[in-house]
Image (tube, rainbow, N blue to C red; front, side, top):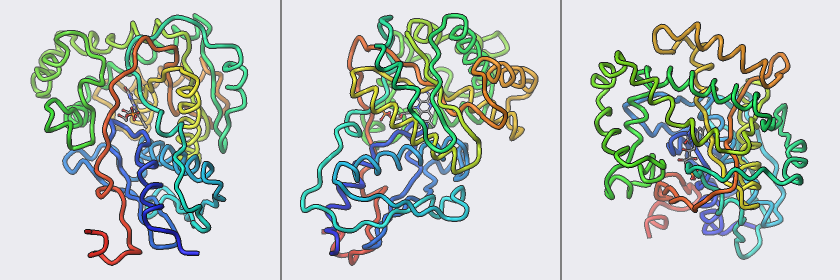
Length: 359
Ligand SMILES: Cc1cc2nc3c(=O)[nH]c(=O)nc-3n(C[C@H](O)[C@H](O)[C@H](O)COP(=O)(O)O)c2cc1C
């Protein structure tokens, strides 16, 4: 039986709540009446930092896939992903045929509740059942690695700091970040990027961000060591958190998408258990930039050392890489939730005549 297009709209709206790097939402969901396909959409016209095949985009696509999977499971629908021969092209990344939908769409609670919390967490340890269950989180070649032991955690926090130093010296990354920031209510209302109120900034932080938004100014300040201070800004939050959870696995496109699925499933489950989650991507990003030759000048030896140390700390097997670090703990406060683009910007219904869609 043909599926009600409104049912598919509701499904797409849940999928669109998935997390993406700097809330860039680099996707379109296209419905043709029988299949829903996820394709790449370039949203930052000026700062092409994360392309269709970039690791960050593939992780985000995995996140979207996980939201779809959760919504379809909630509605007792079978999920049969169709993978193209080269998913990294994003034309599409993946698609799913839909049939026999129930009359009413049921929303999956987890996808509605999952969010980023950048505040400082309480020090209480993770409950033992959560620790035990982490072992069972797998997707493709990917797995979760729990870091609670103090020397191992300090070692990882040091790698975050060294990688952040590289990030704050990288003009392209800085301009992408500044281009993602939303300061005014009008900017926030666009529904993408990072509302500065969600960043957990200290007093004066917003003004400081404005000050350094011009790369030339930050470049001058960096000569005085500003990048080292900026890289320390996450230190207190990382140190206070009782646990860091890393998603690790193989680096090919399918496995990176699977890593995004695993990350999101884990993140959602933790949120449902009342635990807060804050992803840190900077180590992965700088290591990928080392491989791509797009690091800030002079950072190659430092990031090569970070890569080596990260493999040692997390005891990675050959061929495995770090996809994401999640800071996890009990929150002190509920954070402001980030918005999303209007559904019309991310969902295209080709099954309907254009005039019907406009109504
Ligand atoms: C690939 C990827 C990388 C991310 N990297 C970071 C990061 O380094 N720091 C951070 O604070 N949030 C990071 N995030 C979280 C996003 O900024 C966040 O998911 C997005 O703004 C949407 O907000 P929400 O998770 O509350 O829905 C990342 C998310 C993804 C999917």
